[in-house]
Image (cartoon, rainbow, N blue to C red; front, side, top):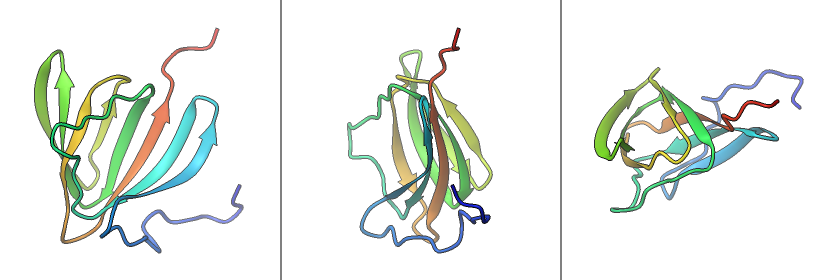
Length: 116
């Protein structure tokens, strides 16, 4: 645990050759990471289908996602400050991310089951 504050937008890794995932915190049922993208997108036909729910906040740049909601494909545009909840097993993919400025995401992966 860091006793000094950190800044998610400083000392960004170069993501030109691929997205960079940095785990910031991990606990049972919870993982927080910073993702840095630079023009990346999911391969055509590839979808994420995650066991955990995900809440994402776009800190810098912009992105477009495709989500499957109730059997229908939806396009979602994200800009700086946009956030989105993606439920577990909601198929989704990244259509595009900024090329001019690196896209910086804060992603929180979590279990939605309540503990008894």
